[in-house]
Amino acid sequence: MMQRIKQGDEVIVITGRSKGQTGKVLKVLKDGRLLVNGVNTVKKHVKPNPQLEEKGGIKTQEAPIQASNVMLYNAASGKGERVGFKVTEDGRKVRVFKSNGEQVDA
Image 1 (cartoon, one colour):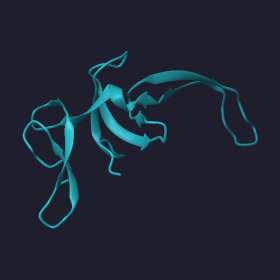
Image 2 (image 1 turned 45 degrees about the vertical axis):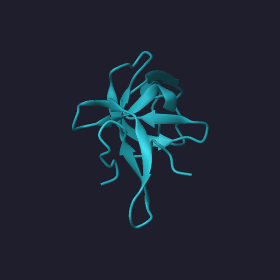
Image 3 (image 1 turned 180 degrees about the horizontal axis):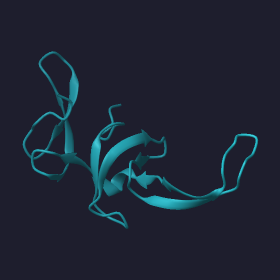
């Protein structure tokens, strides 16, 4: 089954603490959550690990965000838009923006 949001897509957050921020999807998790670059950042306290030569301290990293809280970003219109599916003449199933029918996967 084809997903509406895939790894590498540009998305915009529509609700929550990071509302209005855009970023690239780093990873799609199995439970319907996404890791988005620069969005929903949290601070994590890390202990030093001399065996791996890691320093301790406070690190900033991205936390997962629900896929229902983001929309695919349309660069042409400059805002988030809904996504649908369409079958092309050659039988491929592609994602399209609902507003103008433009293909997401060019």
